[in-house]
Amino acid sequence: MNAKSGPSRIEMQARDSPLGLSFKNTVQLLTSFLEVVIHTIICIRQVYPPNTFTRRRAHGVAVYQSRHPEVRSYIGRVVNALRQEMERGTLRRVTVLIHDVESRAPMERFIIDFGYMGLEGLDGPQRDAKIQGAPDEKGLSLMLRGFLIRLAALDGQLLDNPGDTSFAIILETKDDIEPETPNGGSTAPWVPALAGDTLNTSSAINGHHEPLLSVRAVETGVIDLRMVVQECTAKTGTEVLELDP
Image: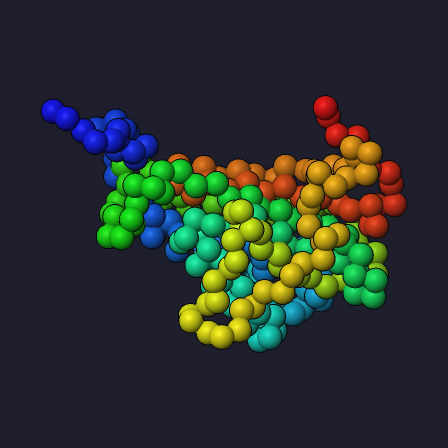
């Protein structure tokens, strides 16, 4: 039997591997998860007063959601735009930046990196098909539960932010691809980020960079994500650490 091309990564899974979530369902679950994560970050880091949040449960873990309609609308619109980039496989990094209100100096960066596997074999209707070897909904929920537990515990490991803070959400795409305009609208929700707002180790002075604290990784085999946190020099007042060669 002749074949024009070799099997994709997904086709190479063992034949007895169970069928898991489809690419489309994985994106949907991760999209709602990102919304929960963003709300929880701005709550536990006290960007707004605690009484402006309500407690919810997601994946069996206590999480938080802002009560303020404008905050909820902003996060909802941003997450919808992130979903479109995940569907395209272009979303590389999302950063929730906590910054000082007056000086806009970065205090903390919550950085989520994305990786994609085997998307070249998932075009059109195949994105709705269950993927062999991928986690099912229960399995992915357990992974996300572990992530949220670790995120909640992280608050006790970070220094308090001095003064009043606000937040911004920064999107980075593969190869600097321009983000799509959500729902075919004429105005995109994005503006160019300031250079100092993003994590850029190549521009660190004399090979130095603020340290990164690993939070959690979620590996679905289709879309993988990993979060790290960076406490910035403007907050800690300490010298940055030298990067390993």
